[in-house]
Image (cartoon, rainbow, N blue to C red; front, side):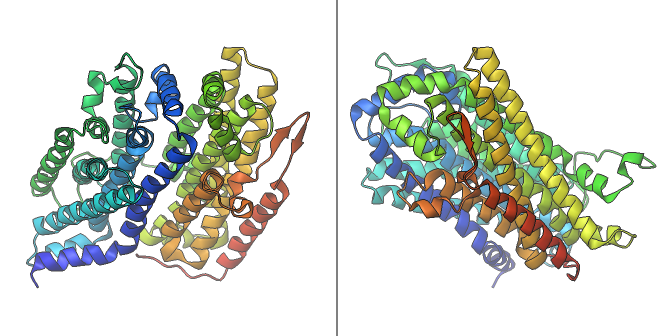
Length: 540
């Protein structure tokens, strides 16, 4: 077998589990999206009312697709197409960085470059690997949509458009890996580019021109600056325009070619963005392992806190719009009540739903923070810390504590932003209490994932990242979408996000709070106790 074939097979073997989860998850989202549309917006009038309300409110267009008609397929594209493209983009950027800068940082790339494969062939194998992954994603997504009975042409275009966004971000990830010296820096750069382009697409849609019948929108020019905007301009199940998708493909191929060219212009383990020089001596605030854990994770915590603040202010400013929509389509209120589990007024239901999303964001922050302990161990830097009088139990406890503090910071940002939204709108004073109760409940639920990640880190160190993120995804699906898909109540209650306290009249229904606190304490104690006898597991 040729060197290229060996490299490609190695990548396929290494990523077989991760790519399966990404691709199957994307296809299932498309299938489940159709089920939700067909059940919740079964009539033409329902879909017309939702589109008219969306066109009247820019906030909805920021987080949904481009309205392109009232058929079931077009409405499905409006609901889920940006998120299908987002999953393809995340899969592709992580793949690109993992097999380029990640391998170089771990020392594997240098060994491969010393063989007849040279420096360029591994990157070319990564490009082909990423393209194949997106082709399979497009195929399975198409099959999932065709299985629902939607037209094959629109289904094929939906899958291909999402994959074209993935290929565009494959190129972005490859280029970021050339500029940044660490895989963490490259991943951070690609995620910020992803968020920025996603928001630019939303701004272009929000600033667009609606049709006279309020069923479609012509985007403003900013939407054409984003790969996500190119995806939406294909308008599946409506006009089925293919050429905007080609922009994403061309963009990705150009950036991938640039990454291959730039690789030969730099030294191994170097990047084009110079590293910031550190201080000669550390500040007194870095004189403890707890401070080191905080320093390593503070940047990502700030990003999650900003997301929490946005979620909080949306929770208390969109209730009027939701009230208007639910008046025209009562099914919307029913859906929100199923997701949130609240029994009060619509304002309370909206806050509960948004704060469930906040709990998921805070849990992601907790997982990312505690997973950093595994990264430090894998890279060998934890060994230097543990060679000092710092014990392994205290070292892990510091990451868990910082993870829980990070959750509190994200939730506090959301609560304060939610209160600001209530004050600016002159809302009911009872919303202050509802926001506080929802925030505190989700803080406990999200903290569960900090100790679960620590427990997985102790028991299955090499699988920490995959298992921890899978637990968050499973809990999110059960907690937010289990009631919509008709799953038994007990299965939804397995998610910590679904059993947090809610305001019930003049009191508070604590629901599963005590079980959550017991699980939090038991998980923390168990992980730290097991860490006493665990050996270091570097590498992987």
